[in-house]
Image (tube, rainbow, N blue to C red; front, side, top):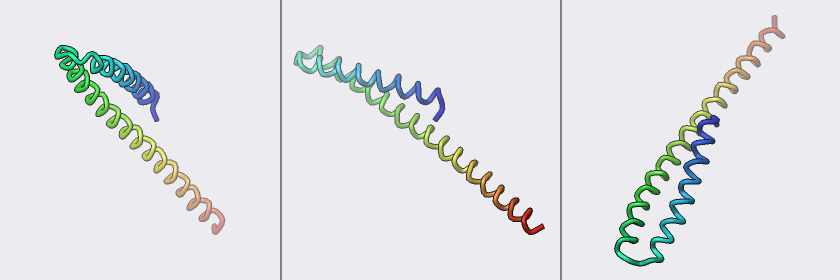
Length: 87
């Protein structure tokens, strides 16, 4: 996982917590202005949730790519050492 990805996820998750708290408080007030504001913040929260999914997906792709590269190098190393033994 990249440093940027980790920091991005942490930032998004902190924003989610903050928005969730603000939304809960607005819903408790139960007036039209508060409900409208809560709805708008809920849309922002949904946007951040999508960003989290995209960031996690990108991080997973990086992890898989690194794993595949390492496995390929190890496989090549085994093949090379096999040829060295036979030669």
